Image (cartoon, rainbow, N blue to C red; front, side):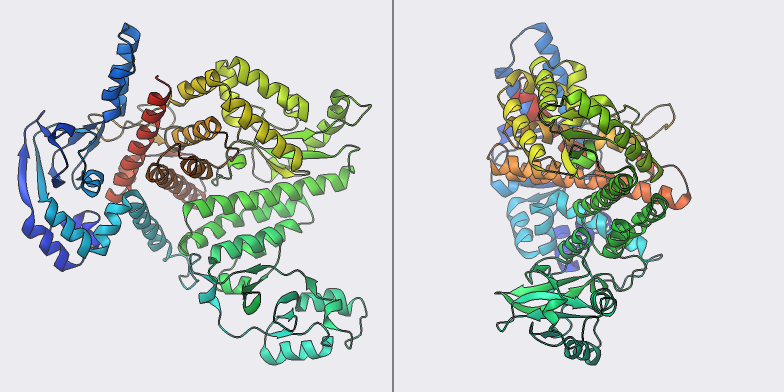
Length: 640
């Protein structure tokens, strides 16, 4: 029992279930090289917990390649490499084979002792009993990686409570749980004076205007009083509908708090009406969501969108780190955090563009500002540089070169302003101020067509950045057309897809066969792992390939994986495991950046695995194993 409670998930199980488990475990010994279990054994009949030693697993897909690959020397060498690369190891405290036990099937892997090893063993009937009786054990077995990720997020929240107040509402809570009182409302013909009196008596800063059936029609706030009544000399006897903000934000009661926060930040409003069956049942304000915060998400978003100059944006950019700390504390998921960071970065970019246009004047041709890379995927962390471009439609009588000559000085000004705001210039010059990134719609299509049809290594590298694009400013329609065009072209070109698969397999996760991680031996960051290059990139590359191969135009990696699963191209369980693994590595990157920011050090993506606690090391190992499973899937699909 002392051993069990040192490892997840047993450390969270109630004592009665731990006692049951301890009573029914028996200890088995496996000499170095001995097989613990293999597919030929039939349906899995035992649950194993490694007490001491290491157990190596070899992906069954590797054995299946014998029916796919020819007997040429080159292919045999590749098969051997794939077998070694796809292998993974389980260490002390880890369990297997959960999936096979749940599905009543044989294992898909050969489990072999790497060294003399001891394993606790539990018969399937007792495993089934524990699954049925222990909610913690059931959740772990059915949501293995997601369950461990939940624990990691809880650890992050606990570490933040010392420096940040823990009284805020969880951002995963439904909006219905935030309703503290009946909504203050009035009819549209109510005089402004009467509405203000209701606000005073109820001690609220806003009132919702509804029709006779309590359907929201508008909102009136104290800010509106100053802006639309006092300064405009409107009579207080005028009906409230003359000065209200029409079409208020509305959400159902089951919507999560983080969804309301994102909507308010995106639209710049401070209130959301909670509506059920078209009837107002409550109002949630920014204050309700961030009552104890010194910096609120909506407040920060509004400040960015109204910043009077670049200097103000520079100072506001620093508050993004504080908001992320607070959202971590409130229980926001990693996907929510990266989307919020991207949302705030989007606001800064749009405000920079607006300020630059105010100074230079509008060009004679409209344009769309594009984002590429992590911003295009909505997966930004706190360390990011610029990857952007411009798309335009050349009007009749003007050449693309002529339009480009007009837009490039503006693009240069915007890129420099973004650099001042903390978004460094791209070392590879993937920026709108580069003539190669300021193109008409037809020029973008021609460029992408050339990459798809020829597929040189340089083209593949560019595709990995440029194919993750979306619009940030300007007309979205030509961008959406280009996204559909790319998805259709790539899906139809099997040669290019195979080249993308080869490219995606060049960067295997750093799992070792002797040690649990392979770290950098020298250079600027010795004994570390690059969490971006070696961690998130395999998932990003794999998700992009799976999406494009199935004609999916989404750019976000999680959306790509889930859309691919919805198209029945991969299993849903596979997709969710890969999403969870990507989320954990992103969490580690974000934690690293927050720590470096507080210490006043430059941000990087390198982490020493020895600095992680046991739970984090375990989840990181499993995340890397999931990356290998994804890559092995691609290797088999494309016979590489």
